[in-house]
Each structure stands twice: as structure tokens, then as C-alpha cells.
Image (cartoon, rainbow, N blue to C red):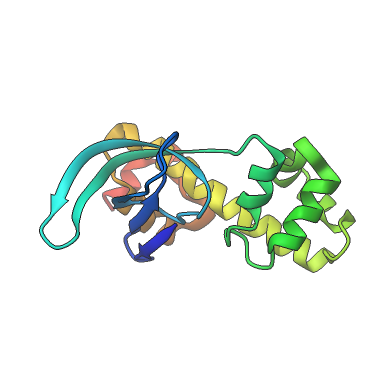
Length: 176
């Protein structure tokens, strides 16, 4: 669950439920577009905040895609994509089943086959899905080079959806 998120630098405070545990923990770090209900693999260390207590401060993260149909429906209805609530997410998963994520990645135009999704909404869903995917790819590309998620957020805001291509073509543009 997202407790706090700063859109400017990506700083996030999340309530996390570790696999196999019943009690949630607090995690802090930089993440663009944190999504409630998604599965995360975090790397970091335990810290104690003077006011808020024990927290897990992550330095790196990896978002894992849900594998079950219920997980995919929860992922889609998490608020990640405006206009997709629980009912519409369920219809999408019912229509495309295990191929839902493939359809979103490669054939988003097919969303208009789902009852309640117009061509316009399908286009907006496709744009939101690609933007979310683009920032993740940028973070994965920059992280091994020591560039934090906070900087990745700033880079994405400046260059937009072309960020990864711009940096692959000429990484020195960051210095300009």
C-alpha cells in the first residue's frame, strides 16, 4: 500500500507485506509509480527512523509481474491505469486470460474487444501502460551505472518516453 509518494523525485513510503508473513513493514526509497498490490523484490537495509521507527530502506527494486489471473486483475485495478477499476480489470482478464499482459504489451488495440472499453479508452490505457513500462526500463538501464531512481525520474520527466533511446544513442547528453 502506498503511504506517501513524491512525484518530483519518486521518494516513496510503502506498507509492505513480506512473503510468508502476516504483519506489514514500512519500506522507504525511490520508486516511480508505486503500485498497490504489486510484487516487489527489494535490496537494501534495515534502518530506524527517530520518529517513525524501524523501516526497510531499499536501494534497488525490481517489480515482478503477477502470474495468476487474480494477481493480474488486482494489478490492473490497483490505480496504475486511470479508468480501469475492479470490474473492468476482471472483464479484461476474463477476455484474454493468461495472455492479458501480452495483449497490453503488444496488442493493446484489442482492448476495445472488451465490453465497456471504447477505442478512446483503449488508446488511453495503451499510453498509460507504455509510459509505466518505459520508466521501468529506464530505471533498469540506469541502475547498474549507479544512477538512482530519483535521477531516473528527473531524466524521464525531461526526455519523456524517448528517454532510453536518447541515452543509448548519446549518454553524455545527461552532462549537458
